[in-house]
Image (cartoon, rainbow, N blue to C red; front, side):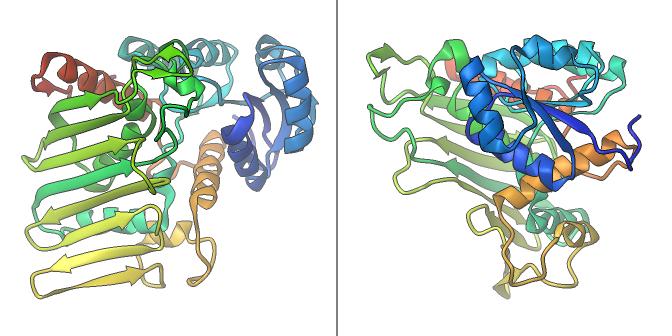
Amino acid sequence: MVAATVPLRVGFIGGGFMGAVHSRAARAARASLAGIVSSSAESSAAAAVALGIDSAYASTADLIDDESIDVVHIVTPNATHFELALAALGRGKHVVCEKPLTTSTADATRLVRVAAEAGVTATVPFVYRFHPMVREARARVAAGETGTLVSIQGSYLQDWLLEASDDNWRVAEALGGPSRAFADIGSHLCDMVEFVTGDRIARLQAITRTVFDERSARTVTTEDLAAVLVEMRSGALGTLLVSQLAPGRKNRLHFELNGTEESIEFDQENPELLWLGRRTGSESITRQPGLSADAQRLSVLPPGHPLGYQDAFNAFVADTYAAIGGELHDGLPTFDDGLRAVTLTDAVLESALTSGWINTPERQS
């Protein structure tokens, strides 16, 4: 176990946008940004300079085999996650792996088992859990303020693949896996719904759609959007919509929970607010003193000083590193949660293929 007084030495596999987000969070957690490896020697060297990381490694094996590296952040195309995480776990490293954890339930199940056997901390960045107002919503549901959960409305909408000329490695099944929109952002939506409600999706029925069957002269087999009907284990019903073709929506993760006593609404693009609906009237509350203990813990700035996505990511990484040091905070998303997301993604794809209801297991590991 790494002592809390010794800075963790962190290595990054992959650069780009998410590499920058991960490195900023690691720096905020006072880790030592020891090294990075990217797709080529040139890109590794450039990423090291751009992100302020000590060294550029020649290969992923060199980084993983370096005994001085305590934690490996995997920030690479989805199809590479399994082999990289397996190799890092095999060397006894703590691992932070971008989602989806893997592109199949079987591979994710194996990673959960290997991580447990290695006795290391292994997490997946479901970072929207770390908005203080999400924790406040969760606390209100747990305290019974919403009453019995009746229905759920949720969506995750983006527009970055709106036109046929828009392209990205995630579009290619060989790199991104058999699901795109749902694996990429629907996983966040499902994690948010289950985390806040403390409930589980028991079964689902899905329709997926590929609007553009060709991008950059390549055939597209992954979905642009998915509509999912869910039944929770409590009996509550929900509708979930995921789309990467919603004009004007940049990163709108939204949910509304309707209980017998109160409704709660959260919009990730306005993360300092919760809307509370009651038959006698409704109100919007802001991040303020007097919220739940978990919301207060994550409120690292005073009210009126907005917290956003990077702050949530910083909190996730800080809690991951704290867990490595033996201090476990509630709500840390582990490989178990990554497995849950992969299982739900597989269920969505199966339902879309068969046009039927798919039951989801109570536990995957």
